[in-house]
Length: 476
Image (cartoon, rainbow, N blue to C red; front, side, top):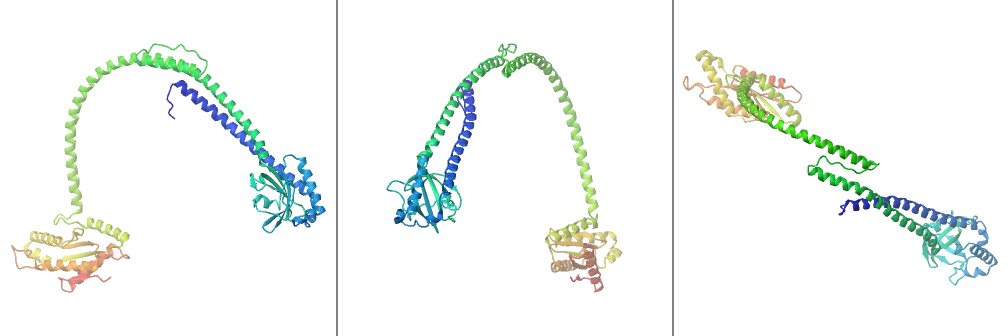
């Protein structure tokens, strides 16, 4: 809450509301407790009075009272007189009556009303309060004031002892009598609330005036400190916590004055030290920058050498293809992908036919050149995601991800046909044509990747045995 105005006003309002909150909470609690106690007392009196009256009535005698003409019966007159006598002895009781229950309907038997609105025997009662129906089986009382054709009442009920749940006695207390008893309680509560307001005003003014004097002195002293008057002291005397605050403020002011003097001296010394330090930092920065450039060059060279070593460890030096170690890493990765996604992959194991003749006829240098040309031809026919490795002398292993056996056979046959038509040795023997034998195997989930490679190798040798220049797949 944003309260505009002086601190005196804010302190007054804060104490005022605090006292109101505490006294109001206590007063409200006791008012509601007294209200509930009075209500329970009235309900208990109605219920107990009805229970006492019910014990004076014989249900068997009431059986004869059924219709309006039965008012002339002696038993009716006797019970009516007795109930009216009881009513006159208790000024809080407005009506006494006896009712009979038949199925879900209630009828009057005797009513003590002396006016022309008196309910005659057999007259139905149309109101259906839950407490009324409970009264045929056990003593009960209304939870609140009910209104019917006779007025507004709070009523108590009790079953007649030998009535077998068919008869009850009811006692009505008129609503104005109930409200009159609660009115006195409300007046007392109002007086208590007024006293709380007066008490809140008194204590709020006393406490706020006490605080405001010391606060004003502190404000003036703070303004003096802001203007540079650090040596001034407050002369306010108090034996409470506010006095301790004033003493602490005076000590703080003295220490601030001493600290300020030390700060001025330290600032001068710091300025001189900064100038000297700045010169040395600039000098050292230049030296560090030179060393840093040298280190960067050395690191870059080491990284280049390391990368070259990594590539040398993973690639074939002649063809630039992956070596066995590197292709095994790709094969293991593809097995993991297959286990997660069930994506197929196929391995081609290819061997150049009669390659030894080239080495024997033209020498190993020409043989190496042939291997490089065949490498480029195979690379031109595979996809970017496919991998090719030099598996052995003139052997190549081709990994085809996301490819089944039929797709692998088709690719292998295209490579075989292209190689058979390509002039690999145009300078030495333009008419010489190379052929290649290829074994094809698709990875099976129940086997290892080494088993798949062995299966492709067996198919390769089967192609050799069948006359070379063939593609042989491994049947699943």
